[in-house]
Image (cartoon, rainbow, N blue to C red; front, side, top):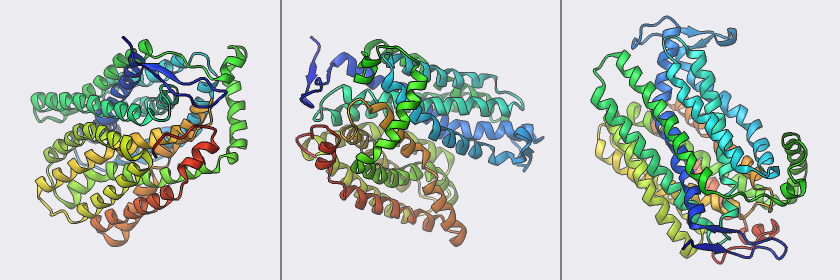
Length: 464
């Protein structure tokens, strides 16, 4: 018999209800899309597109040469092509994600919007099968489509969270989704790495082909498992969507609603203050994830095999870490648990500074510690934010949240790069990231969560 969760939020708002089947469907979208983040973004796409760009620049495949490509007539070093694409995709998502969120809030068919954004991203990823020879422009265009669609689908997906359970259930729901995502992403990455180790004969051509097929496999995984939430989730139209009755143009209505929200958002200063805190500390988290491999190779002089094992270790331990911190949040509250996780992140940075060079075991142990704290800090931040969103505007506010997640991740790398340029030390550059966790902790500590939740018109959970 299906389990039903109910919670009375406000006197004039129907309590959110969901079945076990529906929540399981929601969890499975984390399982589906995490393959793109791990297999594509973290491991294979950067080296793959860089190699294709070098071929287009006249370099021999596998050769180390400094050639140039000319997208839209702009001179770009082949080695800089992929980082520039990331920056461009970040810029575009700043404009796209809030609009997608506003459309989601105005739509009677939010699942269709999830399907459209997810399948667009998945099929663009599968399209990488055609990126051969010197087709760097095709690869860049497909990546932009896939990455923007990935963020847009996450906005729609996150907007379901407040409708799946009351304030006391959301920490657990969010943590289970995040945990399953790490498990799914880690499983596909492990399968791809086994394939690479088994079939790579050492030639640059074979290595590139295996990378291409690994990327394609992530798109197939993403598309296939997206069918589960589309089958099991139910529509939860907002009051604005019901009032519209499906009439009018959802796109133009979404733009108008976004404009109204931008004018009205000053009425929720505590929600904005939480977003600022999240922006700061999450930027530190994203920078550690992004630069860990570079720190391991350049400063600690570790082999690629050590980095691969560590990435897998982080993925699978993050599964347990998300569940463990989710359980802790049920006892002491999500706000206190996230604050504790930031203390642990600070300890991770200090420990990383003291790691000896050419010592794989300490690096892998530190990777395990990162995995344990990583999933929980992100999952609980997502559920905390759900408490601060005015009813009916989940999509819009998660659009702003996702910008804070991905659209500001240049701050940490910039600080790291500037410090390295001044000191020529990756260790000192790493220590510079402490400020993100210390300042983020102080800002989050200063948020009066219970008052902020009430100010947004919601009922606070029993423990915070």
